[in-house]
Amino acid sequence: DQQVKQNSPSLSVQEGRISILNCDYTNSMFDYFLWYKKYPAEGPTFLISISSIKDKNEDGRFTVFLNKSAKHLSLHIVPSQPGDSAVYFCAASDYPQGGSEKLVFGKGTKLTVNP
Amino acid sequence: DAGVIQSPRHEVTEMGQEVTLRCKPISGHNSLFWYRQTMMRGLELLIYFNNNVPIDDSGMPEDRFSAKMPNASFSTLKIQPSEPRDSAVYFCASSWQGDGYTFGSGTRLTVV
Image (cartoon, rainbow over all chains, first blue to last red; front, side):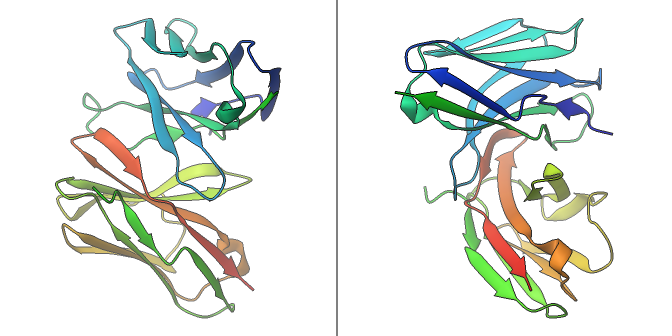
């Protein structure tokens, strides 16, 4: 049973346009969500996170939106740049309330930003 | 800060052989995680340690897999005997109280 789902395996956008990556989750105990970015032959690197007490968190060109009632979050990248081309993973955690520090990951979305 | 260090970066072994993957977490982090990435299953947690004690090993596929953390600065993931279906990228990550979750560069394992 996949608790975190990224239904789009890939996304292609033009440089300068907005990229929107989506993520759905099923476990209502999750209350902390993260996005990681992964380049080939490297480990995932942290990008941005959001707590369940918020519905939006912004960091430069990256904004994460959380809709708890729909169990849905999205990552917006504006404007998209070719260097943003990577695989993006959505992750969720129920820490600290759930007591486990483990992150549950989606399968990732490969973003390609075309010049 | 050197980050999370994994070795080897690549490992090619024959079916039936023992494989040992190594990880050095970030100094001061008290939790360590082993993940496996495959095309079919994505990133899945195998086991995690807190203060060197295994907390959750529910993701370990079977008895062929074992993990140890003898001290705060070193962990191993061992597969014995290895099988072709174990071929994947294995990541180690560490954190402090669930914060600052940082991944290593991974070990690409190929079992032929």
